[in-house]
Length: 395
Ligand SMILES: *Cc1c(COP(=O)(O)O)cnc(C)c1O
Image 1 (spheres, rainbow, N blue to C red):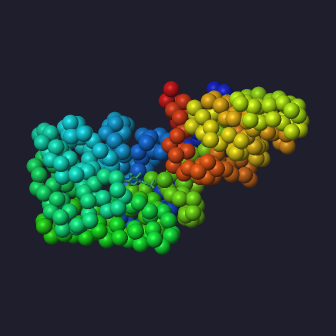
Image 2: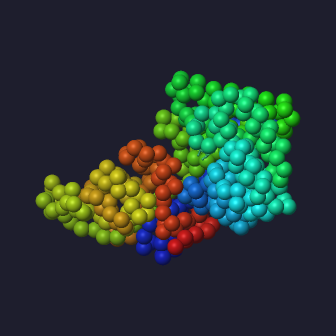
């Protein structure tokens, strides 16, 4: 840690957001896609996967990104109010009752069905609503069905001719692009085939799309296709893996680290227990540190008894149940720990690293859930080139 933390933060738990790593990741990824066909579209839904939406939007805008995607209208409006000048696409559903709000704020809405398109068209005011048509090619979630691409093209074409909406884009989402399994590869190829087939048939009927896109992080790495005008990258920009089995490009680093401090140290005698339910009983005399972080910060209780943290560059194992606001770790083997010593819950300390992906694998989830789950009470400290650029406290 090369910067000095304000005294006030030594009281509890905070997330460090390394903007220079976000920029580096962006540069590496931009070199993977062919710039004459595809531009990066940064996915900053869910508060930029917990990193801070406006801050990350500004970071990628600074790198030249002009296309952002979010999951709902509140997220889109937050970006606009935060000064976003680029395109903002809402990937999920928005009620047609918001048609005018969408148009007034120049927000692009995904259209999930012909019916949805009609409702948006009917509710629009003076200004047309910009939309991208979503095709369901095999995700089974939202979008026009593509089992029969002729019928689908008819539907697309009927949307293109509606008044008060501008169908300027069309897209789909892959269900299994993150797996190297041959069946998953074939499944993704088939999704792609259906998508581009439906798009060409709609184009033959006179539809014209500025943006045609199908790539998420995993597909950008494993199924890059220059027919996709945008690469909707999320998790990989934040430096985590789409799937634990995937190799990610050299130099990609996690943007977020989660830190806390030691709040209390005690000697535990053989036979004494730690935390709720007395699930941990010392089988020897030991030294235990308390850390003021728990499941209300987004550090799952499912990690109880299975987690490790880093202190003074060494691994310390969790003992007893993780509480709402506190957890305990065994520091018997670690010298020079005092109240206030920094603890890395995920991140790097000396030669040791624990990633959010590592933690996720301990209890059967994915890194996405860990970073999205870091609670609002955890302040975000933005760091660039070793110094603090901004501190953001939600509550
Ligand atoms: C979340 C999302 C993405 C980004 O996914 P990553 O795996 O994080 O890259 C892309 N497209 C859609 C439709 C999404 O919902």
